Image (tube, rainbow, N blue to C red; front, side, top):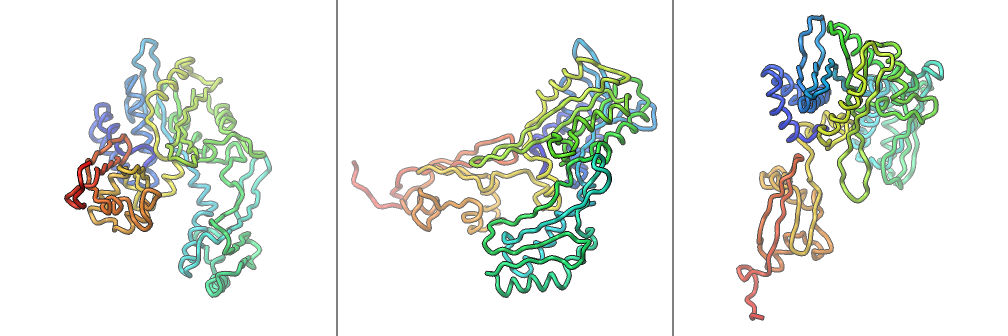
Length: 440
């Protein structure tokens, strides 16, 4: 599972092989195939190498004589030539999540609740936090145990709480630990329809420097200085699931992405501009829509080297060639340990029906034919074929068979995403399996 369709990434790898040597290509492919927490950064490198190569010359990790190699050296192929070196950095909230392991805490709670065969949707988890530092330079520490010490909360008292629920699941109950240093309450409500976790927004940047965005910018600026390059230097910041990379500053006392980058520019005149690449997932109630990619340009007005209007031109060209994402970074990161991380997004579960046709995922069909999915799961869980077009208790195929209809045609509708559509059309009642009829 990746931000961009795996089919698209393979096409980019093929095209990049004309720009990169075999060792460089092999390095990137191996990193992508690992599908681990570092793979997302290499995915962005594959994409940006390809996009830049569409309108200029790209060198990957060139040796410029310094003690560090930049990720990219670029020279435009247009009349008004310009060049720069850049480092590509994928920014995430991983460090903050390790400091405040709320999701791991919630997963452990769900694991224990499942062990007692309780309904997970009935739990409400409230987590308090406390400020560390001054109001203008603070961060939030959640009042939960560290990852290795969850047992301080999930102790015998908590297990007795779960056991009480198991004995009488129709009664609401709450659990608050006796330890004052832990600010967590768990409520079980049998009438609740979905599990809820309420906690402070601890990934929002409340400091200009104590956040993942500034930390990565600072590290990359130091690396680029070691490359021994006298010219325009830039940093490409890519979305790896980072709040400070997408923050508008509307939260009280928080800092917007632009404020953090401007503060960085004041301290690093060697960096001429920063480009951010973010993926925003938009919610649609009635249809599945892919997330949207956004590129923003930030120029350093006090930079030692400038490319003036060319940086705006660069951002425009990048927008033109950047492939469409299919996942947002947060979704990819949250599924790093899931078996599906090494396959692309499927259309599984999406169905369109008329009285004569049905359209569904070709991968779902292949998994069914291969025996990876049993019939019950294929019909009931994946596609829910019972509908107004079917008799009660009948799936679409059983309905057609019951009416004496056979398959008229099967079409494969190819896409640029990581699945295709199968459309099956049924004809009129066929005497091969239905009663003979008087001609009309």
